[in-house]
Length: 366
Ligand SMILES: [Fe+2]
Ligand SMILES: [Fe+2]
Image (cartoon, rainbow, N blue to C red; front, side, top):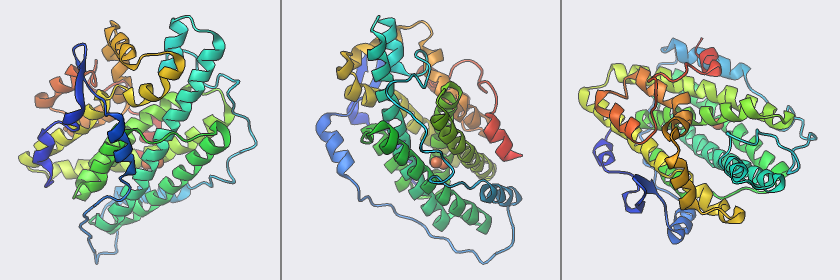
């Protein structure tokens, strides 16, 4: 992992400021426009041939087989005639999304809360969509650079999965939400880091372990909360695929960790913390700056208020403790050296292993 040392510096250091005691990442508007305009990026890649066409990694071959069976068609397998509209609560009013929870607590009327919930859903799904595009591109890179044919087969099958996710989420947004929000600048910077990471190991750690891990957490929350059949069906299908991708991350990183030197382990540990810390340090300000003013909410006041809650760390860590942190712990990539840092910024809370392995991931590993 050649880039390791630079990861010791905080990602997005120039956009750090403080809200209360907490250091946040907030990118200014001019720079956001520039970051979004960077659509051609240099991504050096080590392409790797292999002449061994036999199975070398049994568990990846099994995952590839599972992927072949799990294919579905985003156009014809989804009932696109089903409704999803601004007029319905398709997620719980409170405790799933930030804006309706907050507005309800402030005594806002039902219409305002519902409108905010709809907009926040569209924003979140838009960010998932942009993440899917990054996954599509990274899996293309992995197909080139992975060392074994089993890994290349698997990565190629994930390319198809990610193309389908880009298709289904963009259709959902265009057909039902009527809008696609632009990518959050913090997310774009972090995804570029993964796309530009020089080795397939770092890309796998970054995409399949970190980002897919966070994505499985988000999808699980939506899946459990959704009362809309169309949304439920789409999220269920996407999450089953994502669980397979997260399983690839675990299986591949397990082997990588076993053969890593002490120095490589430190680099991977710091890379993982650096990415998750920057994502967490944004504290949804990318969303709040877009949607907050529309609902008379001051983004900084919202963050300050959230952090003042007695159970802030528990609420904040929920998404991370779902899959990504327990997986990093199991891989040995959160150690005594780094655990306090994770706890200090509210990414890790309570039991190191969270509440256990996600069911879809467990099914993909069997
Ligand atoms: Fe995906
Ligand atoms: Fe994925």
